[in-house]
Length: 288
Image 1: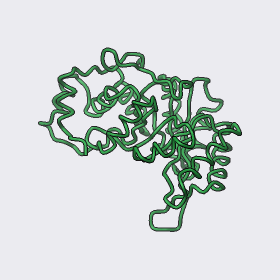
Image 2: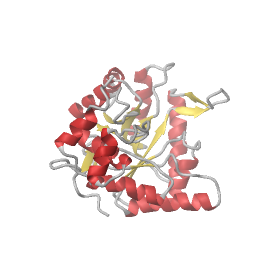
Image 3: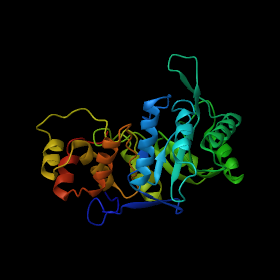
Image 4: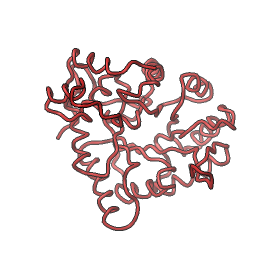
């Protein structure tokens, strides 16, 4: 399998985050990897290693994923890391006794502690891309981004990213620090962040859509299934191909705990959508 074939003619297969980290545009989201002991953990380690074997150079994790256990799993699987591998993690959400089990916490002192913990778990002295998991509504944006900028100046963060932000929040954050990436929920049928994708493309900012293929089953007569049949592909592969064709800054990060599913996802890099197929898919959902 190769990840070098463009999705459509003229569509690049790689993207340079912040002009520094050139990554394959199909990454891997590690959230679904089991972190408990036993055979499931062994299988999770095998999936992470297989992703790298297949050429993935962007892996996404977060403090919130198992409250550090996901980061530790990736370190066990992949450390020492290949020179071309970028592992991005996220901070700004902590465990809580509340009904949701988590809470926003992007106070500067808390962000510093979360980053320090992440560095220890990932067994590294610097995070190449550190994303703010959520904007904390209780803390001024400038204070949150300013705290990350200080950690960047200290060499503990190379680049700063955001997650689940609006165009206004992105613009506000960019007044305090350079923003290298945005990670929002976005897929063919969940396109409320269309303006954010456009803003990222205009600024050359990487856009990492999470839950890229989690859409309602559209039924056997849909354009999605028809196009999948035309291409000899699966519906999830078509959804990933649509994202790759949407903008050169879009870097999908599909996640799975299965090697078979991983290989299926990555094969989407080889799909070529015609302009007609793209238009038929576009008509399935009108941006909010």
